[in-house]
Image (cartoon, rainbow, N blue to C red; front, side, top):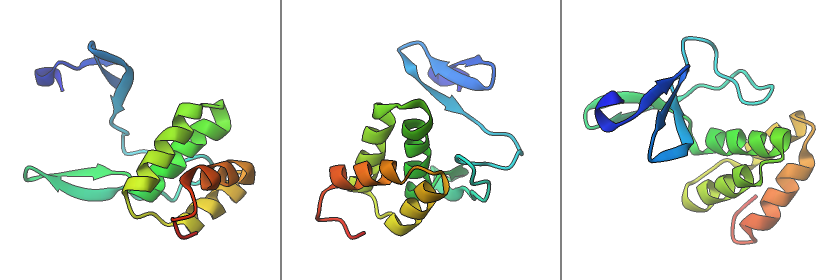
Length: 119
């Protein structure tokens, strides 16, 4: 990360040209989104290196968690962008929102996505 200009701040890596975004490398602790601790990162090869990353469905849940818990509308907009550009499991996202006690968040997400997506 240092080679491409990132600086470590605690558990995050921040780039001086883009301070509003950061990169985090979760340790061996079980990963969770909201109250769901059954998240299993997807393994993807990038230039021959295997990395673990959230699936598009889990990425949407993570961004909606930001919207739900911090009223972060940018998180909602990011969830919408992912949904419009990747195949996702809408029913899983809806069920997750219900378990989080935030069906209202899925309702708003669904309205903003539009009718062309299958729910």
